[in-house]
Length: 600
Image (tube, rainbow, N blue to C red):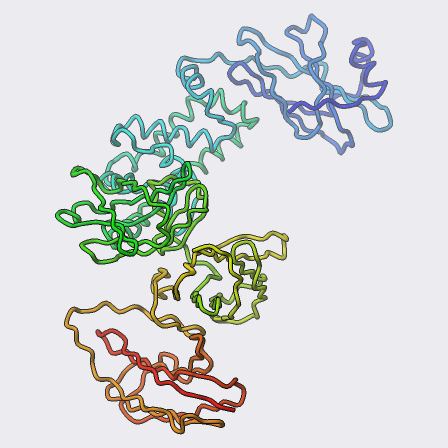
């Protein structure tokens, strides 16, 4: 980089009076090395003693019989300058002049000035540089990425349309995310990749890329202002990272492919708004499993049948136009609802729906991607909206390392500022809020982390809530998937949803008796008999469905009679529910509630 600098009167004299320059006797203060490259000389210098200067005057000549001519005035740091556009038919001699703070002039060696003869560009370099003009290769990492892309393309193992550029970026990067393939490649390319993992290309690619780099070294080493030792170290590091990244990616591939294969054969992955119209993008993950089945989008009593090509491949996308009066929708296979989601017609752009049914607003990915959701140190864990009272209950779960304040907002209004209390374990916190009437069918929940160290607020999560009916959404603790629930567990660990084994059998696990006395004004007795060894939860809910008291939280109990006393001292008068849940594998949870009336 060349900077224009203000110079003193003495400096100006030295630029335009060669006789004054030649009189200098303070030589060998600057040690200069010339590194020839293709049509360039890289000039590197070092001072033999400490100096306090800002700039240097650089001179050049093609023959020592001629006078040195001013080439440029350059910063003293960094200690490199690239003389470009010089001919390989000539040698070029260089010298430096500078002035110290006391006005004393010093220079590089004038008796044996350093020189260099540029190299001539060969055919391979000429073709590569010409093809790469628009690729913005400004460092060795970018060059390695381009060469990986070139090597993969030359192997011709991928079909037309495969995103080789994205794969090259992934191979040359040091990305260590939880889902590297899903984060960088569209789904159809991931399914294509599974048949290419055994190709010998991956065993030899670093060696082949290194050979190409060596051919290009005379051009790019100077372009990147690198001396030979630096170039060699960076190349070796780049080759090491390629091999390390290949091992990491290939070890992650089976895990991510298994994650895709565990999903339903079809799912909604994107909602797009274009020209005041909404589209739902449906991703076909396993079209073979859909043969002979009816796929439909359903909203209330309305239905749209989804048709797709018979030759559809895994990762194909089918786009469906959605009526403007659809706000809540389900994707169904043969009438069985497999995915529920909200459609906000006021949202512009694209909204991604993650594998965990979370919503990612305005994602820059295209609709051929499917979005996993990494585990976050803090997350929305359960949401419940009651339209009659317009109350919104929110449950947060945060890990022990979370210390920054959290902000929860509804639409554009902050409703909850919470500063986590340090804990060495997972912590669940919940609260309830009255929500004003927004006159919309959907409200959006946003979770922000307010980073105190940088004073930056980051949105980490968003989720829509339908406002015309009671809604409960909670995360499945096993894979963090958002699921609609029938019972709130605010303040408790969310329960895994059991899959019906088809027998229709509900085991007799317990008998929950009516509390006594009821109504009551001081305390009341809660009793139940457990008939089989089970995992039991017992808690008291208020009329809004929020937990007031917890007696048992997923505790394994043996058969027997159990009794507890609930006191209403610190509670308001009203209706409460004592709820007992018991789990016995492999059956679904058995839940029962009894109404209690507390009168002060």
